[in-house]
Length: 151
Length: 135
Image (cartoon, rainbow over the protein chains, first blue to last red):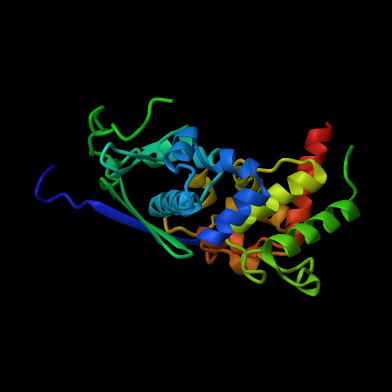
């Protein structure tokens, strides 16, 4: 990277009511598998905080999509943005699917997210950094594309 | 079996009332889901799941977006400035016929398209999906 290069920093934030997510998942049980991957469901456990943690992950998916400047669009699934946890709990975003990977082509590194919940509110904030869209820009290397999962 | 428009309209109205907690008289054909009825993305999911249960027709959030965008690529649907292109507006005129496309030319931010999606537009989508499933 040169000193004159300007990076394009994008942010997305989403706030969701835990009770709203709980109602959806309880009244429409099929929504669990449509919204969350098996890894996400397993990571949220079975304790009282399960719905708050799921709500935070839903907010994180929305925040990442907002940072990319889109909602869930054509040819996309909620599983395309997967939130996993590193061994010490730091959340990490894995991107799957052709459309999301296409949106992420100019991204450097992986999306950064932070999630929180308290009471009936779950919140997530996402930041992505894109290279400028100039024709002379080099394509991402394999190392830089590490956030993209191989599916 | 293909559903009648009356069947679908009733199911859509029930789904909106149950998912959003709105009153029956608020759910008019011209009411916009995300504007007038203040639905959020999670509410849309809830509505689509309720319709699946009542009508047996599965519609995903991505299919809803695809219906509106009509298979046109994002690059073609919107301009670099983020407004809906003439190609995009021509597509919107087919799925959201209530729009006055001429008055929106060059002015409609792509991100605001779903704000204009009405109850009647949702009924149309369900009928399209119902016909596709029956075919």
